[in-house]
Length: 425
Length: 109
Image (cartoon, rainbow over all chains, first blue to last red; front, side):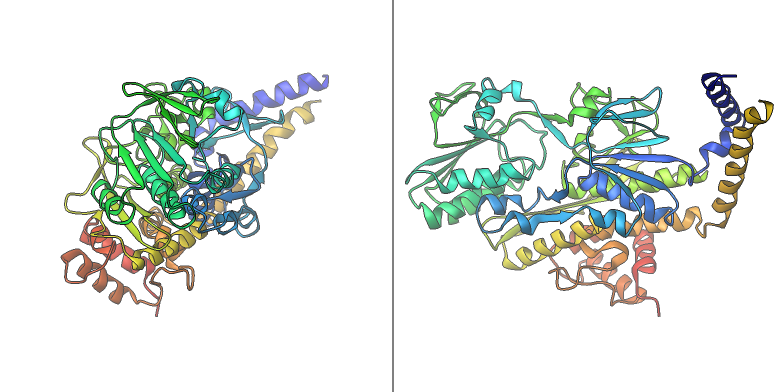
């Protein structure tokens, strides 16, 4: 028998055995290969909690291209210049040192859901029993004409994934001419971090107030009105940034003229600005779309909310911003962390041969800085509704801050330090 | 050749046996996993297993006994205790869930 035959027969034998003892194999928590793709709030938390919930017996590999984690929440403060990127950066290596998670610094090129393999950008192929895909969002550049080229030329930035662009956008704002205009355009919801653009407007205005008091912030919103914390933001804009922040609802940016730094709107006249922060429509991260997971309008991934398993592909679980959300469920880092815990517990239960928790709970907490110290929040609690197979907010729970406060500014940093430790520490 | 052919089967059988054994030895039940999962909904703000970042800015909860914690959670839920976010969050949980969380995260005597 040559080597090829030998492998063939061995594989057949293993396959036969696995088939015969299907129950045993499915119930083997210790043997299952669990691959987590993407180390954001969803993926990092999933990797850590798979280890915690399995009493460190599950085999977990995290695939993430970046060396360290840079938080999107709080990154608007870096854009506004009151904090540094170092303050919102956490290492990944605690996940391996403290929790025994294997980390592969790479990105995923493709997923073969039939063969249950993942091929890395470097070419290596890994087998999985369970894959967790937590890819965040991708930017649909084609929804704004000329945007891809304008980005390439360095004229426009998104900075909607914290990192080098966050720092670059701050530099553009700091270098803006006296009395210049910073324009941010907001796509139609759903997009990542509903209050994020409005917080950013506050942070840029807070910076301009000190360094460029004649400067202006123009908010061009494709939505009918402010998507999140509307009354609170509008009050702040009127009281703290009167004459500086201008808000225009129903203003859909459909094109960019990079040469003339001009934004083209669907209905209104073109607008010229000095710094262009153009946010196009968003969709699930590229790998989710490529792997056929985005079965909600081709943009988001439908999941079973009891375990976050894709409804398109078995044994692939999707977390965070990439999913088709339940009613009133925001695309937030906090929510992704909560998805991850439900998924991790469900996977540990399934692989242990136990019933999956039929009544999971999720919470969301989101703090927005209206200047460098004062904060407003929105919070919600989501209980699983078995009849409707979705999460629903609990009537009478959740809500908003009555007004911005310094106390909530302190809590916001407390939240950040704790969620970073909870996800990565 | 015959021996070689059988080898993988033996290895797999042993592995399956081992995994069965270690699954049994893992000191956890489905009920415990459920309780840990529920308590983990608090961890974003109050730390993994309720051990918050010291001096991080968020009130620490791991100095409370289960009784004290449940008392506070119920008071937030009823409106007897004021706060920023906790009154809004506590109202989203059933009494039974709050008991489980307090038992899970409260300081063990």
